Length: 320
Image (cartoon, rainbow, N blue to C red; front, side):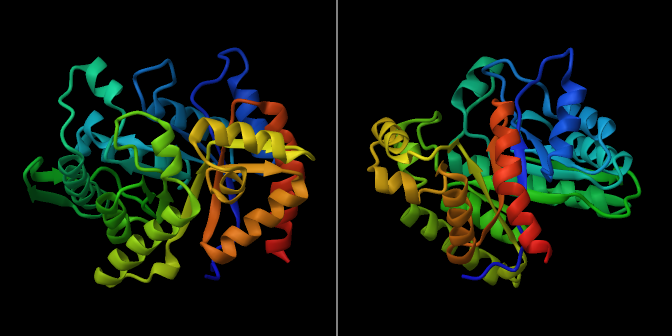
């Protein structure tokens, strides 16, 4: 599967030191990353994504900022549509609007919210998208669904462009919603148990990933959309640049019940020399379509090395 999209690389952050957060996000921009993205959870200390993405947009000039991903149940879609539209307008069109059905049971428990069945949450996600897209593009939005009833909701703000929608998930239903609505599709493990387990990691293995991409293709085709125009995103959980990949793959495999060979092929991991990682990403783009790669931002030394040895060569090759 030849991807029509050029490589883009993002960084997922959950928080930064208050004393130098601005310098850090500006450095990430200078290193050549295309986006800074924020998760949306309550069950451990992290920055609120609405505030964080707005602060990043104000502190930078080029880099995109957004979410991986808003939990649909955490904010009413009218409120979420207005905040995203405002940030998009004030940043000059640099917001990536990531949204999903919610998966972390601990978030719901700690906030005292009902943790509905996955199918109910996915249906609510699709309803929310109808409301959000209406508020971005129509003078007034009226919608009547099972979860949301909106009557004559005012357009948020006049937008030159609307935020690109990123929908991430691992189940057939949520990836069907992505095929129908998303500009960017995050192919993730399915977290059926409401928390990250070895089962979730194994659900991100290569053959499962291929199946999930087929689900997106089918949903896009049924909706009359061109799958080739959708950008496929991979959120990488583990990135290690090393000339001796075997022990790292063995360690990751023991944690998840995979073989070292499975770890090497799994889109959740990037382990090997910089040359090997570049070759892996080129192969995954060719065979699977992944062109938008997001790595974790906890280790700034790794971010700098990855930018110099992986991001710069691959984006330069695309530019030629």
